[in-house]
Picture 1 (spheres, rainbow, N blue to C red):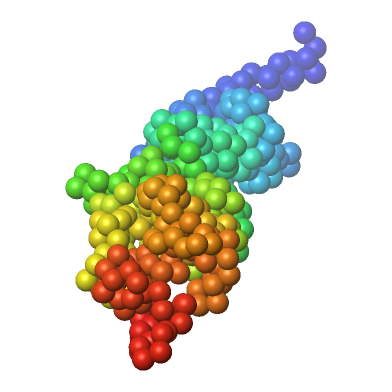
Picture 2 (spheres, one colour):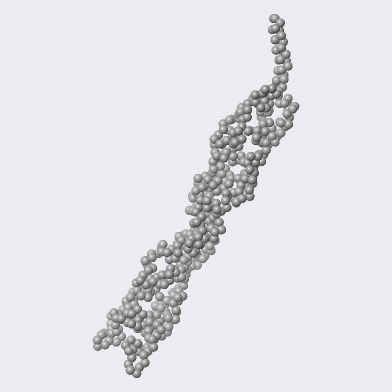
Length: 487
């Protein structure tokens, strides 16, 4: 063995003796702890530290180290030596992660917080995110509890906003899905657009709504349809959810109850459908309140869908209420002057029995004289009159004389009163009568059809039949003309 070979062997032995122990001690946790004990003294310690500092700091204390802090790689590449890179590179990546800023949120050695976080959530999140956006008047409970990662993946996700699931499935992790999937579902809910109405973090409105009701509703619904001459008080007060469930319902239009039960939450039931009342309007009895009323707003009073009588004619045949001659209240559209719209004790939903109802307009003294026509005294006004409209004068069902003959047929079959040499009895039709209201000779030329203070319901003062005649046929010399009655 020559001299040079001996020197080389000696040098190798010295390196083995002195450097190998030094290298092995650098890989031991206890040796690094002599200087860096504070870095690994906290509650949660990175498992890589337990594996030895050189697991990450492969070039510890070497001059000219390729990467900062003597690491064996740069940034997140160090982390991916152990952590699955696929978990951090999904479709949507948290900006700090995308920038390889792992240690912005995590302490690589030890921490007093779980997951080696440098701060507890949500304070950690508020290092970047504006705290005021999460601490308004109404705060989502998970946000208030600092449970940011219940909804968000802090690294990456296949969903927008780093959500762990797409809404509404994300929401159903806490909220009962059955409350949102009833028979009728609000369109935004059906599309999973919970965040169209709700802020997921905090707002100054109840229920973490993005705006107060009804302004929130008007982001989709046309405001003009909810404000008019007549507006339903709950609508005017913005109480949309008093009647509607904002998510889903078993009832159409998302109503919380079916009409009329819904209406009776505010309106007194007995005023509309009472067992004590004998008659009920068919739509009311069937609970079809919205057949006549707009539940939100209307240009007509009482929230009616149209003005009376046009509203009534949506069901009733208009032609049956119009004739050559029309009852004034009908012509004026005053249906409710005579009829109750909901319920009553009188047939046809009249506001009072006949003839009291008629006497609201007609002077009762004209119908209550000493002698009364039996149908009049019995209150049978509609036996002769059509109360809405007729092709005959005085709203009669038939021309005057024809109507009288319905009950007095004998008058038309035999001479009426006394006959003369030229004719058999007094004529009862077919002639002009200048004294008659309608210009024609009829039964009422001599008789008052309602009541009279004279015999036989005579229209003029007379104690006998022949005392009536001078009222039309002149007066003999020496006799006074009878005074004409008021009717």
